[in-house]
Length: 303
Image 1: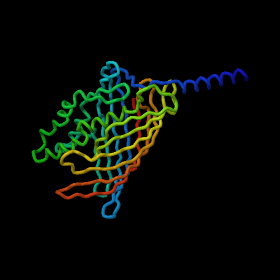
Image 2 (image 1 turned 120 degrees about the vertical axis):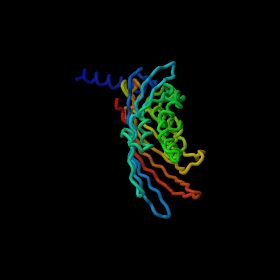
Image 3 (image 1 turned 180 degrees about the vertical axis):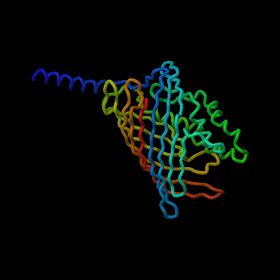
Image 4 (image 1 turned 90 degrees about the vertical axis):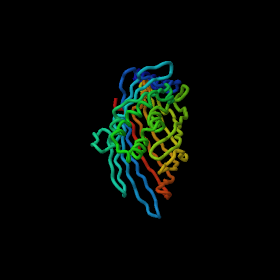
């Protein structure tokens, strides 16, 4: 019995010591290996207009593959492919569904652009601490996606390009990629330590900054568990001819587990609450509607 207690005490002391040891959390991707993660989101959006409230539900998911091409010192060259973009929207105005994996019909120009978006790859440079450093082939990627404009009637080209730009413009692509990596500390940490990161948010009518605070809850030889609190602060859009602008603020809280060997997220869940206003411009008229967004998000590592 004494031997068993001694072994148990030794294991406990050893695990406690490991938890208090300084740990370097960095990305250490295996070259040429395809990694894949899925981001799932459920949003409940409530707008108020002329004293009447109406609700919109959006269920969406994005599956992304990424592969390390090369690495020099702490700078990684990573190839990204958005395998699937899916969104189903239910609102009083209309119900809609989009799926980049579904082959578009002849005159479905926006859907054809989605098909291209999920076909071609884009290369980004990212530091081992998760800092986005820029794209290598953005112009080439954009041109390939927008090749569908050659078949679009002249009267519809401008409208289709604006629709596609919601997810194709460089700042929107940066948001989608940087948010998957922006959680690493700059320095070594131990259990209980906190650190901050931030990245720009562009897309869906929102332009702003996401400010994150992470805390290391636990660490083992195989994974690390983090708590995260985030604040979103939007800024007025500077884009010309913007028909919709969303001015919101809010917070989210969540937990995530990362692979300590590679740095990749294993699983992550959070809940968000945002409040603000949506402004819509149409033919010289401006309509402002208060809005509340409650959302739940989950990230799952597929491979």
